Amino acid sequence: MLLKQFLTAVTAPLARRQPGISTMRLSLEISSLGQFLPWGVHLDSFQLEGMAAEWIKPDKADPSRVLLYLHGGGYVLGSLNTHRSLVGALAQRCGLHALAIDYRKAPEYPFPAALEDALLAYRWLLRQGYRPHDIIVAGDSAGGGLALALLLALRDGQEPLPAAAIGLSPWTDLVLPTATIRKVAHEELQFLEALAIRGWGGQYAGTAPLTEPLVSPVRASLHELPPLLLQTSDAEVLYDDVLTFAAKARIAGVPVTLQTFAGLVHWWHLFWRVLPEARTALDQVASFTNGIWAAQEAAAQVVLAARTSAKRIKPDVRLRARL
Image (tube, rainbow, N blue to C red):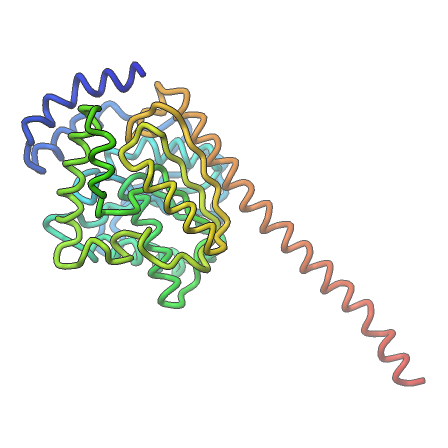
C-alpha cells in the first residue's frame, strides 16, 4: 500500500502531462542509476549479432542452463539498464546464467521487430550449444507477453521449444478492452497507466491488427506449449487478462502455475529490494525452475531404467530362441 501511494504521488503528475516517449525513456534510465546487481553476480556486456545483450552470471550458477530474459516496458520503454537488477536477482535465486537482450522497440520498430530479436537470441543460444530443454524464457509486462509470443512462433515454425516460460504480470492482450479501463477508472495511477499502454499497444502493432495472435498471445491457440509460470497482482491493470490467458492455456492442456498477489501495482517485481512480496515472488520463480529441472531428471532416470531393463531381457530372449 505504501509503495502504491508513493508511486501515485511521484508518477501520476508526470503521467497527467502526457510526456513523450523520449522523455519517459530518459526518466526511466535516470531512475535505473540506483539499481545495482546483487552481490556475487557478474556482468558481461556484448553484441549479439548487432544487438546489445548481457550475460548475467551469479557465482556458482550452473553454466549449462540459461534464463533468456525479455524486459518489460510496453514495447516502447525499458532497457538492459532498467531491468539489470531484477534479472540479476532472478538469476541468482535460480542458480542460472541469464541472457538479457535489448530488443528493438516501437514506435521506431513496430511488430514484428521485437519478436524477431527474441527469436534471434533463442536461436543464437542453440547455436552456442545450449539444448532447448536447458533454456527457460522469462519476461515481465510486455516482455512477458513477448516471451509467450516467442513460444507460439517457435511452435508454429516447428522449432524446438524451451523447457518452460515465466511471465511476470505478462501483457497478453494489447486490445485492452474498454471494460478493463472502466474497472480501474477510480484508481488514478491505474487509469492513466491503462490509457498509456493502450496507445503503446497500437504503436507496437503497427500495421498488424491488435488481435494478431503473435501480438496478443491470449488470442492464439495455446496447445502444445511447455509449462508456464504466471504471476500477477489483483491491483494491476493486466490482472484479468492474465487470468484469462491462464484459463485458456489450461483448457488447451498446458501445465500452468498461476500465482496471484494482493494490492501490488504493475512492475512491482522491479522493487524486489524494498518489497517483501516481490522477494517472495522471485523465490517462487526459483522453486518453479527447480521443479522443471527436477522433473527432467526424474524423466531421464525413468528412461535410463527402462533401457537398463531392456538390456537385461535381451540375453534371455536369445537363449529361448536357441532352445
